[in-house]
Length: 298
View 1: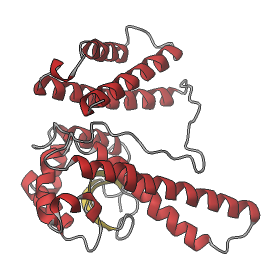
View 2 (view 1 turned 180 degrees about the vertical axis):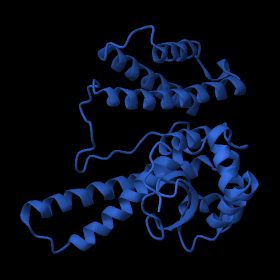
View 3 (view 1 turned 180 degrees about the horizontal axis):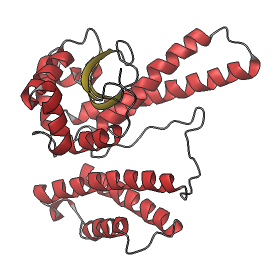
């Protein structure tokens, strides 16, 4: 089975699972979320082989899937607020973290990021952070049961390293899109211009921060509920030099495994090209939700 068929099959499976969930929740068939799922079903039923969609139609399908991801997230938030949602797993149990699927095919970000890098980055590196996080949580749980905290320093470090690696990568995948690039819009753009002066000034600052990360790590655009504004941070490894009390909105992985196979030791071109696949819709959705959280400013 080819990459095109793999992607379509994955989307069809995801679509079917959500239909079953909405049925179990007895969501009204006239609800907007049903209409969007039915619309995606109609598109998928016309897809029989790679040649059945041209490039523009395939990009449209990917955009439709991304939009539905956000719609489902909003649905869960609203249902949790009114306290009527039934969830078997309302939280991730100790040692039960899983690798999230990519919202696009492994080759979808080419030529900016190659298929080979995406496969290794997602299935090997991100998976290792998930595994390390689960292991750390289980060992700390065992320490609480036994009362033996002789290795608490080690497992706490592992918890911070692998946990931050898992969460940042989960944001990173969704921060990118084959339909990305360009500039943000709406409230996010206004907030960027308000604090950084202009989008170009923000982009220059973020780019230079990413290129200047010492060793390996991340460049991160965050929302600060305390100062009630945006900020750009660096993070060495996954968790060093970061700032507490902030919410990541846009993250760029500048560990060598994110680009070395394609760009060798040239981090600069990787960072410059990366702007062509930024998923501003995802960043704005994260911003709008994060901005709802504000603390007393000091």
